[in-house]
Length: 95
Image (cartoon, rainbow, N blue to C red; front, side, top):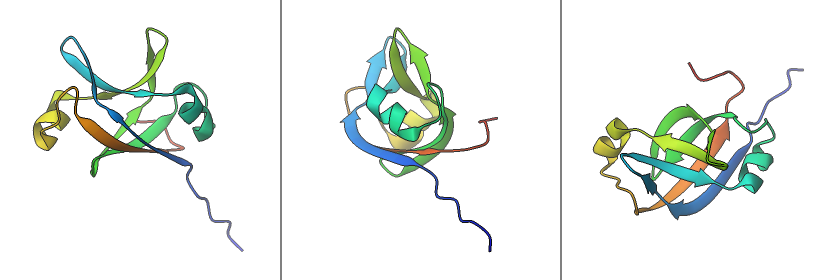
């Protein structure tokens, strides 16, 4: 009988952070640990219903998910906006 695999996910509400010309989502170390795949896990990010593949990165000691200019344009999101985030672990690396 085949085993079903359930991807690990974390959900949280936060504010979209702005760093100069860049925007990102600060991910707490506890949420990264819940995903159980190291400090830079590949994830499917869902932000206010908009989905994209990415990798959690580390910048200045913080875990971050970058939100591209294209994603901000498509969604209308700006730094400082309240957002709901779901990160789902992807076993294969992000291309």
